Image 1 (tube, one colour):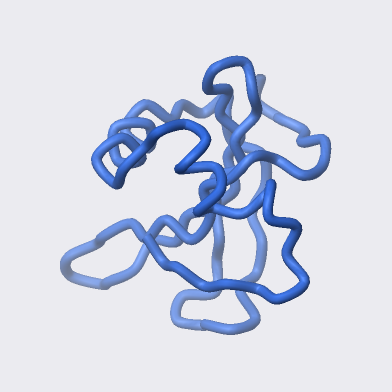
Image 2: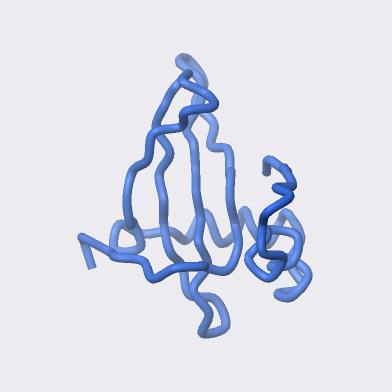
Length: 99
């Protein structure tokens, strides 16, 4: 999980706040990522900070009746791995084209 603190970030929508509020550690996050399904897919974004590769995949997952914003990046050519860029309470309404 990438940890980056944004100074203008609303703390209740930050990853650290969400993890503390849910009483989650990295193992819990990995378990929730493994549960993601197509119906929870929301959109694909372009990562302007890291163009290798430039795609970010956004999902929304309900945990304890709250919507969690999940942003993932797939890295690697030969051996692919998934980076969780965001895992926090959704700040805005999300749409799900495959739901």
